[in-house]
Image (cartoon, rainbow, N blue to C red; front, top):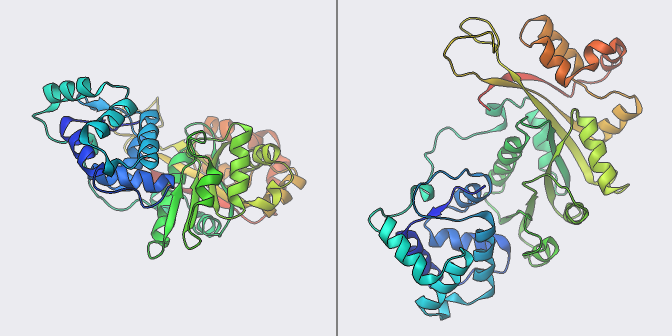
Length: 368
């Protein structure tokens, strides 16, 4: 979903900005940067609003993900600086599925007195989010994998486990690492509009690509793109799995034998309800009017370690840690059974896992 809306003033800014120059090159990120600059936004703020936002504005015209890609495609394919305002407006309106005159009349009537839409405002800056604040304790091991020059890095977990947030923070940290050099984020969600292979071929050799699949890979072409990109750049994907092994197996099965040499590793996580620090109860027993938080249980496992774990038939390396959390009363037995059923059903797993190096651990609370 997209949280980006445009008021009358924003469309006028867009018209003016797009008429001043052209994108630096034909890459998707260059087109996005050009549109962001015309809207007086930072690239990352616009990307987050389009990819991960939730529609909230009650005024203006909504810019859906599809409309945004149409606009970026138009900007890349046309020299809008050589056009008249009416021509540029026609292309912008068409991208938004409006007629030019109807668009401007509607916006002038409803938002002409409001200035720029609040959805374009720069977010208030607090303490920078990082893996430790999320509660990912095997953070340095995961950072080591993420900083490798190529290969596939998998953030895994069940539905609602926070893996997408972890991936966003990881890539954000990675961009900070490369702040002193040219780096290009490629988000190949719209392969039909901008094939990934074209995006990679057009990059200058000095530019480091970082490829992020913001949605879980599902079809054959997406996996093929990931394999192609992983041979020259770090690739980040999310995958569902009730353990690191399960997620790894699903990716290997989809990619084929080549995956074993391309996958760097897996960061697997789950979110566990936090005990109320006021009454000591879990929901729904707790009746305190307090905001509940959850803490992360996570582990980071390399591809080689996963292959060893598969050979030993060990689905998780977190069995001992979770068992201890249950014994200490920090985790409900039903939550442990939900995510780590083998703890209680197969004691042999505990014995075998005790001989393996600890890949991760339960972490401090997180507001995820």
